[in-house]
Length: 470
Ligand SMILES: C[S@@+](CC[C@H](N)C(=O)[O-])C[C@H]1O[C@@H](n2cnc3c(N)ncnc32)[C@H](O)[C@@H]1O
Image 1 (cartoon, rainbow, N blue to C red):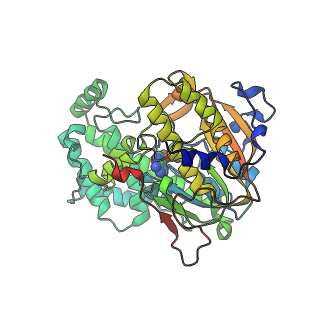
Image 2: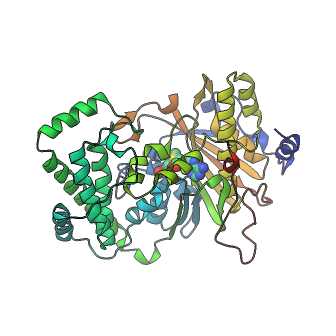
Image 3: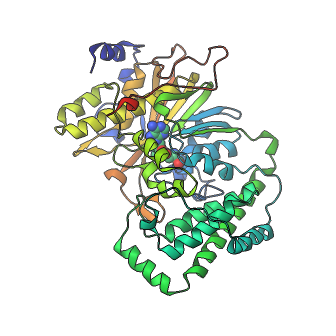
């Protein structure tokens, strides 16, 4: 690590807010830490999958109650909210429902397929009859689409692959944008269920259980089951969209904008827009490979092997760090970590997570809140208090520590039907609130020019160190 770099990090915009951060490991004893249940704080949201939230499965989604709470408490109508790790766009949906605007960034290209359905802007009720007509046409189709995935035969029985290719062939040749997107969202779930991969775990894994189940299925009326699943999931999504439309119909004129940038590396990409709040949940420190976990979906949606490989290389925390983030708590953890590979992962995680947060936090107006939702995972048995490390980093760079909420994890749906009581060995999740000070100056522009630059494009990006990675 370069000495100059360290000096810069420790001296820029030092404020006297550092001492406000509660000290110690036992977080729930401090006054600034409020023990809450976001589910109870937001009783108007009855279940996490309401309206369009459950249309797509995505690993480690936000529960909408956290986002709604942050929106209600830290923003007002018409505000712009930025989320540099938008995933499946929970912040976008909640912002839209609450008449705020949102700008969403994520490395995963799924975001661009997801958002048009999740914030459906149609004014007319969608017709179930029309959907059925399309589904009937799909059965008779002569079109074929096979994903550009060299390994595809490994994941499907040949007769199932044939039918799925026919369905996708039909849907890719249908002009009816919204109806075909509805059917695609259903087919993504069907693709997984009728493949050899375990559909209860995020990562692709051929299991004995699934192989046996598929063999049994092939002896039965599998085609009818596949059609029924496609039909019922499509119908459910169409009804969710109609509910969403009815729910948003009255205040249609006042609903916000949701801008999304998918397939972008937030560590080296930034939008040139002033925002009024940041609400985000960064990737986990422990293995959670979002691109690999969703790669079956990405192939069926037409993405190529090369594209997917390149995006995988940019995922946090499996990439080269270009600087070392230093804070009191992080330095203590480094001293205790004996394994080289874990040191590297820690450095990579903090370098790129902080880069991405900093790029977005640079775009915040003075006094705007940054709401960052994190866990406190363990590395080699050592607890990594992410919220504390981020608070330490940003309070010497023009942000003021406001408070931290602690929400005990009961059960978190990490993916599909699997409930994990304790993701990454964590017992609580934390919502850290930082407030941008009025005297803040852009502390580390990792992407080039500032938003004030005249005639600048809508976003800026710069080459990441991974482009030279060997
Ligand atoms: C915890 S998930 C966010 C889930 C999201 N809050 C939701 O409700 O769906 C973290 C996200 O970080 C994204 N990510 C990982 N590395 C990234 C990078 N370099 N640039 C942008 N996004 C990245 C992953 O694709 C993933 O969607």
